[in-house]
Image (tube, rainbow, N blue to C red; front, side, top):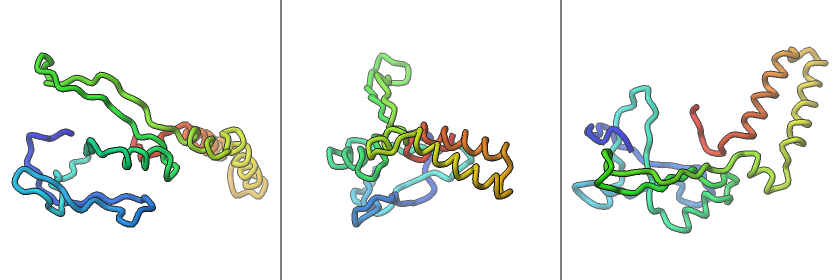
Length: 155
């Protein structure tokens, strides 16, 4: 997705935490040969490293939908256009599913989960295992997490 003008120096595979039997991608296409068993990657440099996975088909789309309680992935509708300076434009982006929405689909509400978490913090405060300020900070962080994306988000 970026650093396309740099030659990759590493080889890697993509692995996941799904419940299917494979759990990793084992065949890749490169410019020189088809069906290689590693993916050409760049060295990490402290910046985010983005890999795009395109045109995966209906099975993969539904696997990301709700199958493992991950919900929908973020999507971008990208179109090639010679008239654009970059050669493309992004017509639309669609936000992926939040934790709160996925949990609500299986009958766990944000308010109930937060209430139960607060009760645990209250017990920890009374037992002198947690300071009130720290408990409130953790509760705010918990609430932010429920409103966050189901997939890894390094922000």
